Amino acid sequence: MALLYIRGVVVPQPPIPSIILQGHHRNKVSDANKQLIIQKYTENLKPKQILPLIRPPIKRKTLVNIINRYKRTNHIIQQPRTGRKRKLTEEIIQEICKTQDEANHITLLEHVGKINSNHNINIHKSSIHSALKRQKYSTKRLYSNPERRYEDETYVSRLL
Image 1 (tube, rainbow, N blue to C red):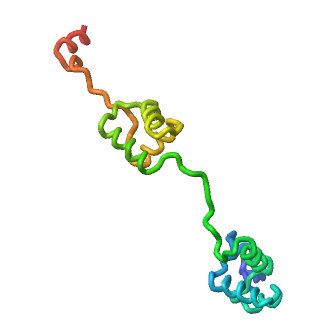
Image 2 (image 1 turned 90 degrees about the horizontal axis):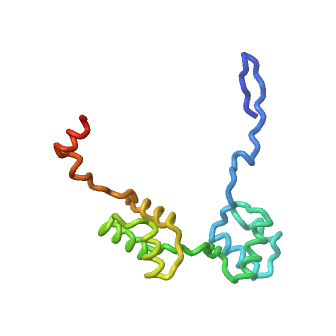
Image 3 (image 1 turned 120 degrees about the horizontal axis):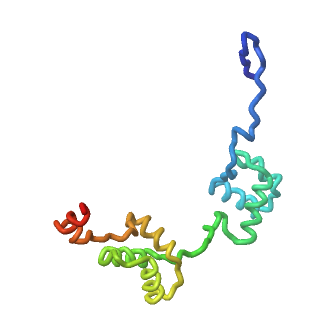
């Protein structure tokens, strides 16, 4: 137990709970340990008998979960999790960027129509905007200044 000095008085400092030190993360069990757990399980050892053999120690529930996953899927390591498939593939994003390079006057809605007709997918204009933004493209239109702005007639009319 550590000692803490407060205003000249020695006060024993309470220990820090282990939950704070560990943080919130999953118990990482190495693939070698998982292999050992399954090997001992196939040798008909019970989870209670396998626990002392595993270093660093793990919880019994974790060991039982590894065994149950092996029974269910016949795999030791976790399979990659699947998620929602992206509508905008790299090919489509490159097509959008190419179109933007060739003609930057095309609006986002025109991009939507073009993608819908070429690739037969429904996509919102905000998805295209995000894709262009990730590629460092600006969706602002570029306008040329009218020529008459800098002519002598324009200055005279402004002064009057």
